[in-house]
Image 1 (cartoon, rainbow, N blue to C red):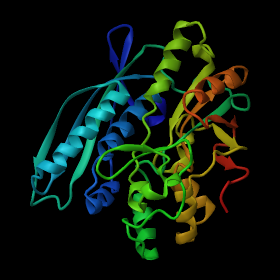
Image 2: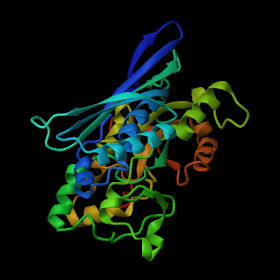
Image 3: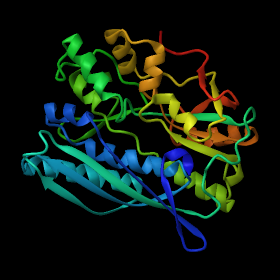
Image 4: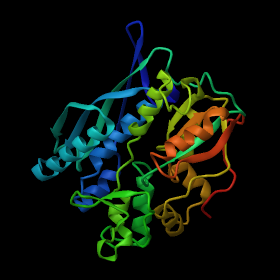
Length: 337
């Protein structure tokens, strides 16, 4: 169920367990080059728990797996700190994990994880309540490139002859925070000329964890809490925008299409990548999240109130489009050229 974002397992009469697994991918190659692993544990957790949310599940627990060619206590300590920070943000228990030293099998560190969640039977978001042509899509901003498209990112950096340690040629927007190499989280550092981000730090910024406020929204809607912006039946689907970019919207139902009329602003690093790599709009939207890291499908009647509720918690959230029956995603006014 859930468009393939997570698997569902029957668990007793009233509950379903949700299970998914994912890794950080080739973003780890940038981290290795900079010896900056402070964010990759957050990427690993985010790639899993965000997928659980898409079926309506509350994340419960996480385990990680690290494969490395050689022991490195400093790197492992950095990964451990990052995982703890991520599990706190995701409200999950870090139940354990495994580290394997495999000098004959792996040449660089690799990291993946598995997350477990649960959802009440009957509350799973599987697309059955969607009304094509009526339901509204709400976009929630990303924190950057997240954990996808890094083969293309590395290729553009290589062709452009740009070093990861160069100062970023673009400014971060006011809504984002960044994890600096060395660990501290800073807000909008590009406004401070003494504290400029490097290009490597921008592209290593970790994937946003959407558990807060999405789980709070699901609970409030399900329980009819005072101040809930919608009922549970108003929530039709959720989407984690990962590899494949906006085509992730098509995973919920084969007969469902989307018309994006007001796309979210594209982060400046993606505009820079397109310019340096001479990449088409279509390829950008098929590869990157283009500023929208997560999306929610809502009934038209609840969309405005729920969008305001979300925007008060994640600034920049807004209605971006609606459903149709085309079976494809159409971006009417791409915000890059």
